Length: 143
Image 1 (cartoon, one colour):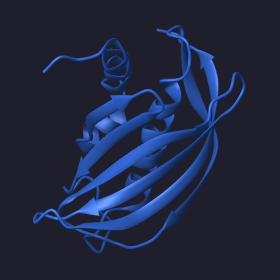
Image 2 (tube, one colour; image 1 turned 180 degrees about the vertical axis):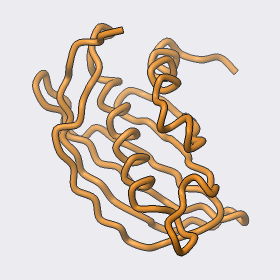
Image 3 (tube, one colour; image 1 turned 180 degrees about the horizontal axis):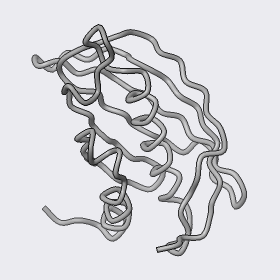
Image 4 (cartoon, rainbow, N blue to C red; image 1 turned 90 degrees about the vertical axis):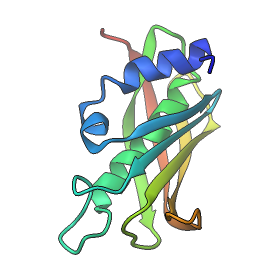
């Protein structure tokens, strides 16, 4: 599989995300204005009742939207989250979560993204899990 320069750039940053690596998240798709990340179910992402923890869902959504935003900035820049609002739609366990971040409005000072988080069970059935809207700000790359 050939990796585009844009995918390689996002992946190089993604592997530096200690939390995403610890949780076992997988970068699956990178396109201009869109990033897809999966989070498999494990004991690292659960709350006390055995379902996906809201903090893990929020982090997954934030990272997906952030990297979607990063696809719109110059190579010497990254992004940081200014704010987000998330709606948790349903609780799930097992399977995996798929977060697709999309840029709604790119900008030089602020970038607005939307993220849909979907639960995918072992049989491939999909159900909505969470919806996020966030505001990102371009910042200089420091590494």
